[in-house]
Length: 303
Image (cartoon, rainbow, N blue to C red; front, side):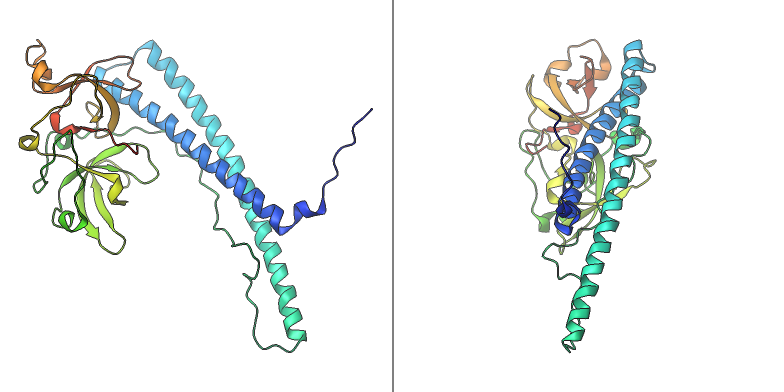
């Protein structure tokens, strides 16, 4: 027996139904943005490996091809969904506008001199949730001079206990170098504190990468980790400890595991590793990379 197709209920085109669909699609857009950010992170890491090695392997070429194909497909899907949400928002606003006009007419007929608000609906009109299509995946260009220097004014901080400073203390530490998490991004970058806004409780920071398109941005206190000066590092992370570290020849922090602490690298024949950590970065195909002691931080619990 054929099952009759479900008839579309008139309520599905009502304000409530449309609002619910907008919310559902907006959540899906947020999820797609997170997936795209993960693809970007993996591409950036491979580009960092290519710069560090001075070339690329067949496995890197294959992995990049897969990631770029995924990125393009992700961008197309996000564009379609964003267009759908945009249309739903326009339709939603038209419905609300019609409802408001009807109510105004009713009030006028009753002789009321008080105009009704177009926001009389029990639902709050959401802001546009359509998101722009992802830009072409790019890489962070290294700023070697920034990697090898720290600014004056940082406060003591050991790698095993990076205590966050109180806002009043940090306002006095302008030009202090920190690891800052960019808005809507997953990774931390090397940055410098420029100012503090006590009203919003946010910090104005400047990206250490001089080639970055947007070098200055604002972040909350929870998105900042102080970078210690060399003389302030009095302890070291043990082997197998999970850390947040700057990948060689970049200004970006990535998750890594300590292979050897600085006290154990002095006997190794490679002079570039002496006095530095030897790390194994996540998604780095098991490669062992050196990192300066000031650029190896405790991995954030909330990250």
